[in-house]
Amino acid sequence: MPTCRGYADVPRLVVPEGLYLLHLKHADRDLFRQTAGRRNATAEEAGLARPRDGMIGRHWFAGSRDDAADFAAIDGAAIDGGFGFAAERAAMAASWAPRPGTPFFAFRLAAGDRLHRLPERFSSLL
Image (tube, rainbow, N blue to C red; front, side, top):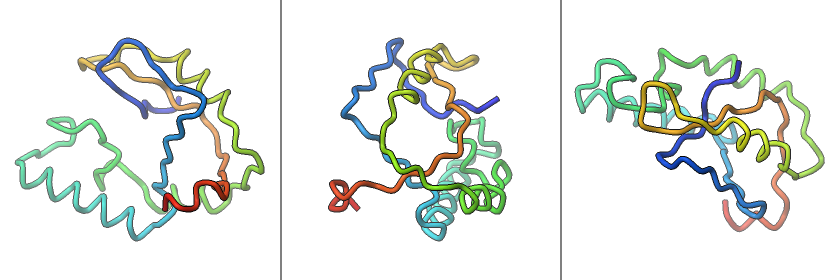
């Protein structure tokens, strides 16, 4: 089952159609590794021996992720020609619920291997 990826402390999820949250984790592998390293160092400096002691994003910890497998899956995925996310928004809303053991609410990320090329209108953002 896919893992929780979105979380907040509000009981109602609002995801307007025109809102795009761009997750570029795999767009720049070196930047991803550098960012993960900084997060790991910050947690270590704060004295967090285990990710669950103080961070929600456990997937950032080196022991909790498999970069080679993640990147191999991305490399093998086809690029979807469209840029519509109605199905993803509906799935997020349908699965929005309290996250067990935390004060947060979360949605389940739909399993999928679609990659998207950003439309030209987003080019000035990056």
